[in-house]
Length: 126
Image (cartoon, rainbow, N blue to C red; front, top):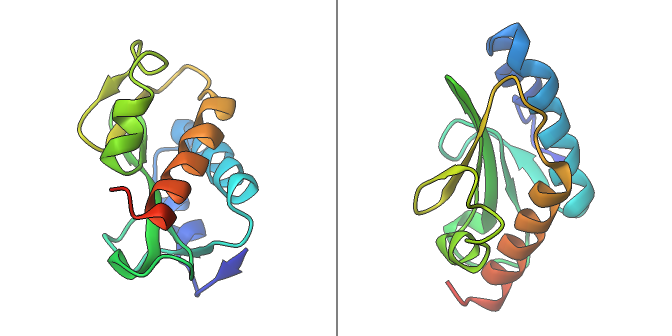
């Protein structure tokens, strides 16, 4: 994992105390799912991950954020569509999955979505 003076620690520290633990877990899950990625906050001003093998969107393929009352992961739209059944219990938009605060974030699902987003961007299928 490469860090570009990422600012992710600062982002998490600015979030409400009750969200920080789950945000840290999402961060760890993304790092585990994409160990070669660069962690940064300069694209959309939220924690995001880029890969040198992606030649568009500055290599970005996943982000996470906090917007009360949700902890969110952002992936490419095709990933949301491909995993509709698994995401049925969560609030989704075209590219965001929202997990309610107060409930554990499904880390296995997060890793699966991140891996799929990275693959989709590398395959240019988006």
